[in-house]
Length: 279
Image (cartoon, rainbow, N blue to C red; front, side, top):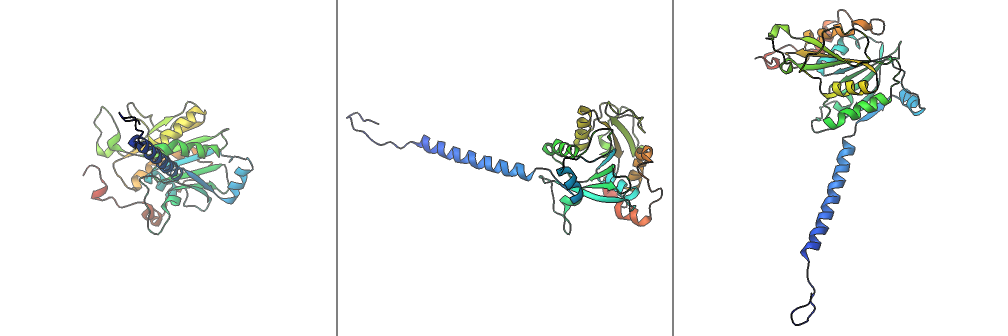
């Protein structure tokens, strides 16, 4: 810069330094964002047999895919279906997000989303999901799972937990009416649901909604059975409500009509004052 007397002086520019600092901060932010996205990525881990088939370009031959979302839905399958020796664990999904919590003595990420396949009928696949999936992970999970399944003649049943406090109705709803089922299905679903449809303005949210949307777009027969309960934790009465949803899968899945007390005690809590929404 020239002065009034013609001298040339070196001028320190704060703007240049601010631009450099802003560039460095943007680069750091971008690196943090990439690391966070990578950490939040949903990863599927299959058994060696399934992994080899998928690497060879062969998708899993699946006629019935049963997805249980929530502790009661997952516990229902554990008690009434998976308690037999006819199922093999063939994979799991690892998910990390802001609500992930490490459980002492076990890998909660591995045990919160597990896939099982029927030994005698490998075309029947079950998945239990008890972990929280963030909004940006819902469609990611759905797309990755359904990429592994053949879609021809595929039938999807989703069992989903919901609080009766979220159920909207113009009529009085007494506590004795819960738990109860409501259904919502895709246009490709041609069977008759086992319960009445979900009334407006009630909606399906979370992973069940993502799966139903995916199946609607790809013309896959799918139905969501949402169980409204007044109990928060795993409860034997709520679990039993789901039995109706699988009655039409008698040839594919055999329900245990009377599970042992030990199995029920393992997955169901004793209803106490802390787990009742009306107390």
